Image (tube, rainbow, N blue to C red; front, top):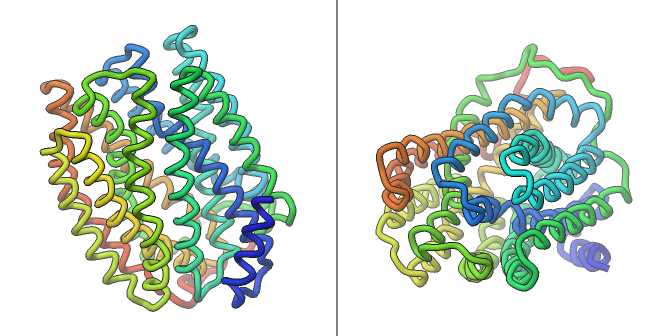
Amino acid sequence: MIQNFIHIFIRRTHFWRTVSISEMAELYSSRMLRVMSMQMMGGVSAVYFYQLGYSLQWLAWYFVIYFSFRICISPLVAITVARYGPKHGTLISNILFVISAAIMAAIPYWGVFAFVLLVPVSGFSRSLYDVCYLVDFSKVKHTEHSGKELGLMQIIERVMLALGPILGGVVALLFGPIIMMLFAGFLMMSSTLPLFFTSEPVKVHQKITLRHFNIKVAWKPMLAQIAAGLDMNASGLLWNLFIVIVIFGSVSNSSYLQLGILSSVALFASIGISYIYGKLVDNRKGRTLLKISVVGDSLVYLSRYFISTPFQVAGVNVANEVVTTGYMLPALRGIFDTADGLPGYRIIYITLMETMLVIGDTISVLTLAILLSFMTDQHALRSIYLILAPVLLLIMLHTTAVYRRGVLTRFIHRV
């Protein structure tokens, strides 16, 4: 039913499409369920670990290991997507996500051993899905109107990001966080079903190689992705920890619902601007939008140091959504434009970009771990935003890739 509704909506609003509307409807509906389940479980995983009694410093080093593992398995992720295609890769990822949900539910009983299992299972699942989603979207998008399509996807994501924490918080409050993890796993498997009504968008059994890859057109966006990774992790995982430790002062089952309400207010605020931003990107205003948004994001980081009440948290969340959406849409447009100009290297390029994102994740938690070695938990969580604020300006390097056209390599990798 959900997919049929999205199919009808796209047929009315995406009349200019030349590829199958069903393919985009599948991607939208699958992404909707996936984001909700990930937000229910992954969005509050660090808070769940902290509630179980693990110290903030212990968790910081755990996530350093987790993200470092994801960097190391990037070649395996690219090989998997090239061999089986993004849709089958998504199926593999979702199965592993359900297993990781079960492992997370077993942490109170298995202890550290569960974390040892969680690193490879959850790490490979997340990295594989991120690459599969971007490869799939980059193939089925419309070249000239991808900004509008990204804007609609952003709206869908924001609705699910808003509903996910509230739904997860209610389940955690009524039945406990373990049941919440298992319910998220059920939603995750449901997100796979819409993808298999059409065939794979790319050729399967491809060969992966870096030979003749044009690094000159990729290195600036790759550097920008590291800064974007810093932002995503600091505004997600670390920000949730900031709220429960600095603002709430403690963690209980009700904390999940409180986090959900605070984040949902901000996410609903971003829904309206996503479509407007998408039209700006298609009207070739993406570079200006990106630059203004990155500066705004850096200023928001500076303000986080002074936050002390839930009302201020809600205000920062709203501002963060406005500026993050403002740079994310043109940045993704630039990534897809570059991928289109690298025939035969699409999977390699997108995997490299996702790897840079994870490197940014790693740097953010490593910075927190170092700060915790000589600061209190609250002081470290405040100080990290002052440190990261100027680094975010590197995201402006994404402007070099927006609106690229033509083939960007002299060598076309034949797969």
